[in-house]
Image (cartoon, rainbow, N blue to C red; front, side, top):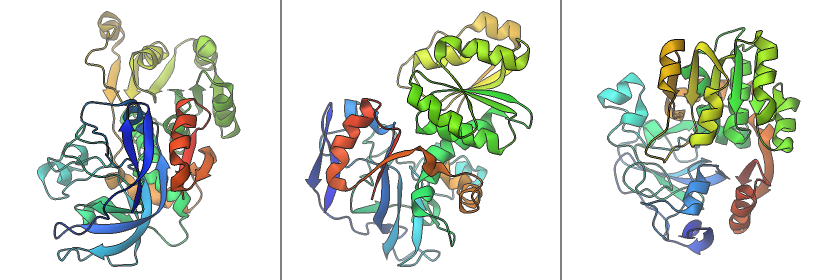
Length: 343
């Protein structure tokens, strides 16, 4: 089958790879109908320890079940499903709490051994899904597949950021980063009742996109002034770093009010960060990290998407076939795209 694979740092390629088969009783094989290129995939493009050449990439997918293991009783061949970006057993202590990311069976699609044992990804014609009765959710009638694909990662990440930050009706929220996750965070915070969402990004195009969909756009250099004007100089109640890395997190810390909360939902790979501990103590700040959990949230998010409360497809800037994915990676890395779907 055809798949997009990591070739070497800075390059992905289309390749022929073996078609997956059932390996365990709770496996399912899914024919991919809609995939995506995520900002997190750019870390794979640039190369990380644990991502080997030949790794099939991609962790966002909607598809049709074409084969099931003997132990699956809740999924049938022909079901249209959305996948989470990672696996979990659904039965352990962590999973029963809804903390699926902490499951010992966690494997992240298309990311080598960075977050668990390697598992081929979904930028391919077919994908094998372990623990499929946990990892996969059926699409409701009327739910567009192109919208549902966001539930597995980007929208789950944005909603988790709002949830972890405790965003409440009337709050002022700042979001640092206008990529797909930042835009989803803005939409999620508006959906749960934020009075104002300030989206901060370097790129005018991404600021304009956020402004078209309910946010107040700000460049980094003017973001504190914008937030201060909205809050009588207090700072934002909740600030979300939707990028990852030291600079965006520093920006986020500079926008929050005393006793406010900073949530980082961007991917981090640096070992340390110079957190302003003295200020955090004096102002009783909270710093939290969050990873989206589509397994836990998908029923709520699919309902919001199906009923039009949130339309995540507003961030889609390109739709491509598998053969055009390598070029799409380059455009995304050069900030020419916000979100690329693979059809």
